[in-house]
Length: 127
Image 1 (tube, rainbow, N blue to C red):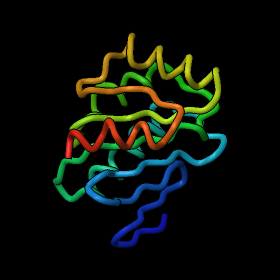
Image 2: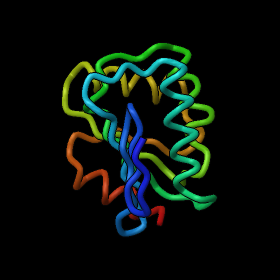
Image 3: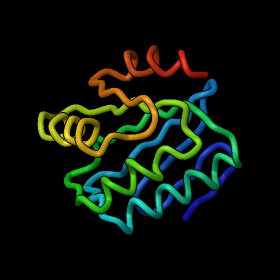
Image 4: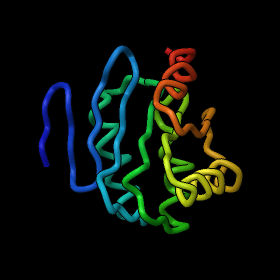
């Protein structure tokens, strides 16, 4: 695990702050099960040091999810977030993301994007 003031990285993701937005990027070939979800949520909350941010969550590295992991992200994954923009690029991830947003129902405003620029426009409303 690597920790720095402006970047944090664990086995599954890396995250950093830029212009009031928390950028969260899953590493390639990540499978989100309950263990992974718990780890990334705990590390993100610790990194944020009790401050809430809009989050750009790049899930392009995710290859699969399990229900327990999705449920944990929908419930605890929204702690200390104003809103979430999910960045996807493949049809499979778009399907997974849509399923997550519509079925798991995250507790903060959450939208799906294929372009980072569009996600940032959305998230800047929540700074």
